[in-house]
Image (cartoon, rainbow, N blue to C red; front, side, top):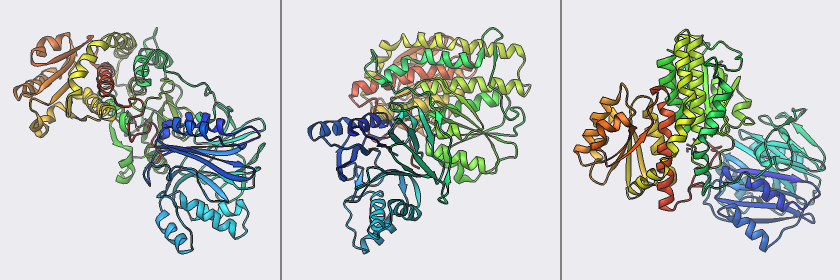
Length: 607
Ligand code: M6R
């Protein structure tokens, strides 16, 4: 799950590679490295940790050349050391790789028996030795790569340079994405269009099994059989500008505070405020006719799907099944004829979600996706894409992507309910009104930032935190726990409030904070009982509710966060905001790396 870039041109390549890698750090930041051709010889600079370490190294020990490859790593095989950092190289070839070579142990054993000496713990190094072996047998670079790639099992996107060949770079993909960028006298390879946006907006995505020979002015693409093929070159609208933090200390904080605007933008695209009606783009299939809607996603996007399951079932009366994408296809669940499969992903590159999509496609399902990155693989492989207009999300912890996903899902629910005759025009109008009030309510909740920061001091002392929710705010409890653990490293669990008494209640004591998301409404009284149960066992409750809920149960809570009174329909969107702020401030108090927490990456492109 790494970022790769390659550039072949006539300009000094090291600064360009660093610029591209800056845009790929979201794919991993365990180490970074580049390799260039210096007078025909392969030179490398590699550094452990974040990209600035590599930039410092290159400033101290410059590297020349106009042809080069670069890599930012999220470690899978081998510790995050300099030795394991890409590019991996012999005196004849240098390789960067995203993906996992699943048969690397067998290949490595075979190569070692043949006299090859390995320097790293990585799966990637076998690619270097295989290609070198074939080059030593007098094969051309193209033949050597074809022979090597044919031996690989698993997923890969590769960029490869060859000693003595300033006129050639080869890229290949299977399972992992790879894009070609067309410049002016300079050609590029990259994991995505984002990395290439500073250089060009003319992008061609390679298809499964494709490989490409790049020169300074041209690219020749071959399919898996070796035949020369033509692939579309598209204009991307991605900006090459570096996104800054503005007045904020962290990207996550900035992204939390952008939510009123981006939810508003997303609603603007989908809701007609005058007619109080949802207007979706045309679908190539009938939204009313699916016997089942099957939702798959990972992490925070999965929790958005969980909220939507409540909405689709209650409001649209649409049967829904939901599963985490990494499990979905292994269940081999029978999927009904005419079923719609919905995939939710910020990045659109999460490999588990993409694999689930491909499984659903093989089963003849209709494919609908909600993505934030429109250039992504999931968007490209869907029948219909509903975009979230969150803008680039840089912080590893997802915030504005989540609430815009919920916004799109709420609109989709209304559209589906109308298509299925499950709501009247009046009900649709009321739901639309509730949705259009969300941006202002979110802005109001953000005004509680200082008060929430004070409560975060209390959470920062805890070893474990429990989050409770009921109904459509149950997934918000799960999301709150995920946010807290991923950026503050405090263990947290989300639990359906009614399920607490079936086990988790044993954990409660005086040291155990319990954050309860409980909007007043039909389910409040049940959750109120659970709050009382926690308090009776000495647990410290942080109650997130409205005036009415806090009026009833505030006395049981150590801390309260009062949200505006809202239609229960939109409660999950609004209750997401305080749990994001709690996690953010707790992490800041604990001094963790909020935007790039340890062991994580923004986009998870390995299984
Ligand atoms: O890009 P995706 O939405 O497909 O990513 C899914 C998860 O990896 C992601 O939501 C992850 O759980 C976040 N770090 C949570 O904040």
